[in-house]
Length: 249
Image 1 (tube, rainbow, N blue to C red):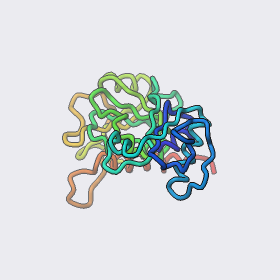
Image 2 (image 1 turned 30 degrees about the horizontal axis):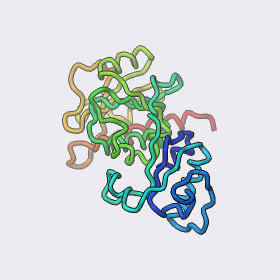
Image 3 (image 1 turned 120 degrees about the horizontal axis):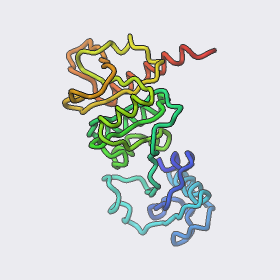
Image 4 (image 1 turned 60 degrees about the vertical axis):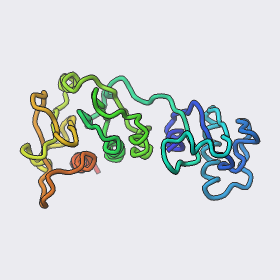
């Protein structure tokens, strides 16, 4: 994750490394000037690479005392590296974005991270997180994004109604997702500039939103609906498939 961020051009404000994990790449006592990895192998060589990248980018690198990283990390078995990055969100959807995903009331951080990872893989132009949805900087969301948080423009939007109104004025067709009703997603023309609006995991989208239509994913089995992240993947990759078919070979 940290390596992905640095390679994407995000410079960490500081990097913290577990005692001995970098094989000497941080220098004695956590000094930030040394870059030699010494005899680091395996996991320590991967950490040493991250340290070298961070130092080259101008970040401060600190080697922690034994046991510290286990006490400050938010996971039971943490990785040997922690980093503090500046906030990554952008003020608005990029003008060139053709497909946008809107998190209207998604609350589960794992789902939000999956949406970010899916958006990255499918070439989505931006992810808009409406007020009241999960924080994209929630640690679980960050981990679930698997580094895609550094690749996809994320917009921290206002309330859902305001976000949808602005997207409509910007020329986006706003399609809500629905478990029942709506148009079969495979019959939708996804080459049109579109915003996919994802609702709450339990009760979906509220009534009265300013939408231009809704889409559903037909089910062959007895499941009522798909997980929000999986539904997003199905829709985004159908959009990618259609757009690829219109590209000149």
